[in-house]
Amino acid sequence: MPRTTSANLSPSKAAVFRGPLNAPHLSAVHPPLQTDRIHELEAVLAGARDERHVILLGGHPDPDAIASALAHRRLCERLGVSATIAHVLPISRSENRALVKLLNVPMVKVSDPAELAPYRYLSLVDASASETSIKLPPGLEVLTIVDHHRPTTIPKAPFVDIRHDVGATCTIYAEYAEAGLAPFGTGNDDGDVATAMFFGIQTDTDDFAYATPADFRAAAYLKPFVDAETLSRVGRRAISAEAMAAIGRALADLEVVRDFAIAGVGHVSGTNRDAIPMAADFLLRREDIDTVLVFGIVEDRVDGSLRTRRASVDPAVFMQNVFGDDSEGRPYGGGRADMGGFRIPLGLMAESGDEESLWSMVREVVHKRVARVVPELDKRKS
Image (cartoon, rainbow, N blue to C red; front, side):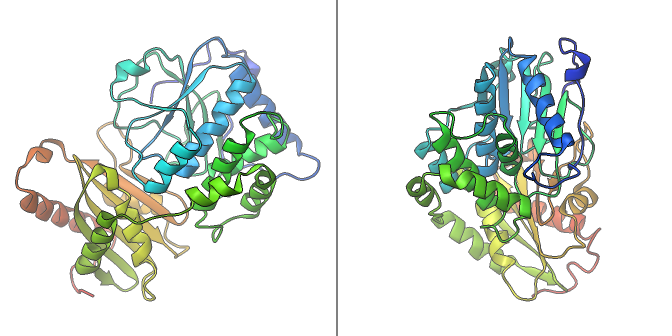
């Protein structure tokens, strides 16, 4: 991530906010801290309106990230700021592609740092660090960060709002709107953005099973503006044949130690990368498993997903202890309260033509790494 400056922002517009708010959700009379924060976000964006902004999504964009980007872009438009939503990795899950198609989400795919050169400012949503698979141009400055995941280090930017006590980043943007910053009911795009945001909260809280009071309040605020028919169409979560095959391979490879399980799914195509978290979700339904890690080879990297029902397991800490950091000090994995993931480049090994041998080596290395945290691994099989 480039070093952030506030050279063309006044001191009052360069305040940095960290961590959750004192109040987890809005009351009828908004607390001064919440009001101050909203004013700061408005000032930071408006103070940089003369330059182009890019909202760069990390990883394979999911509904919460896509909808948060829409909400941020909507904010920018209301303030006269030119903002573009961009992503590097493909949108791999069918319902996510349906979300983009049905709501005509304006997104551009970038593959070369030169494509980001026209932009001066970067906004991050549903992430606290920029996408690691692309190197950012030196002139691109991080302006705003809004996220609900726990970062390994506190990021710096003129505006930072990271809350660990909400289930979705869309919840935070719904609070901004409810508090009066570009409220819904004032624009032609309200239906599309509200529908996307509601779906983002729904999916990131596992159909509200893990929703907090703030998430329910945000959903209630958005619901009157939601297009119910579109939401129903987007929510039909079909499982591809490749995803079903991956679940089958995960079941065949499953190893269980006490209430922890690990499984490999072999090679998975980039367009169906979400077969890995889908397999993890499926395996977590087994009655004697509280935490599960599923991994596989996706194109030129190793991807993995962790799911847990145990309060004592912190996915971000687990990933850090198992896989550590890359050469630039960025963690290979991260997560929130109940789920996490990791992505490790294969480097030159990705050019191997022997897929079976490559998978065998990757499986062995991942097991050895995980055994640092779960020493009993490989001593028994399910």
